[in-house]
Image (tube, rainbow, N blue to C red; front, side):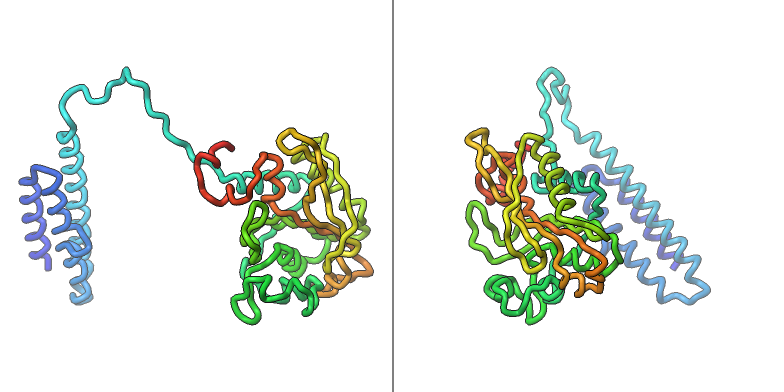
Length: 329
């Protein structure tokens, strides 16, 4: 084995000295240092040696590999240097080419900004799986079997019990299962619903949902929190209003609107998302005492939040990957 190692060493070094161009150097590398080269084949033979001979042979074989690799790198650097064209090369008087710098996608930028705003109000970020079971997606959220939201035509079911989550409220349930009150979390992430794609709908979109649970939490806390969020994200001049609504997992429930002037035009009311006080049935599903604890929850589409701020008229623009559009932000 040792004689074979020395033979390959002397043969490889002799051939390397004769290499005059990069093409020949690559052929040398393939013969000796590639996955099917002679050095790797030599290393594979170590397993056939006796336990007494294997350490010395292994050391020599690894030294050979390191030596030939270093010699290859040195030869390659020398050939690259001589392969450069003669003459002045780059004209330093010409204007340079500015590299195109990448940046975060606008949805990622908005998500980070929203997390930072709610983080200043004491909310932690919670995450959960995008493939969910019916308990976390429906049952624990007080959505009964006959509710239209559970219709298979309105969800992406994978099998009888599992589906792509239709809302990040599932993360709220998992957060409450993991810890006792107080709880204050936001849950940003992708959600899936088989909606027809148009200017304001997509089968995949992003949500950010919030949950606050403690003793004595009231609707006043909910409105104060969301007003602070709106003024931090859109500006102090933006007005808000809360309209009575219904959701199975909150009672009382409300829709939150903002008074917004898209593109600097005529101001109008625009729905931002839903919110309300957590229904006692949700607390019972996760083992909380509804007589002791109260809480509020809210959920907004991230695309819906950012589109009016940046004057984007069509949600599809965010997903098409047109760099000319995305590079504006």
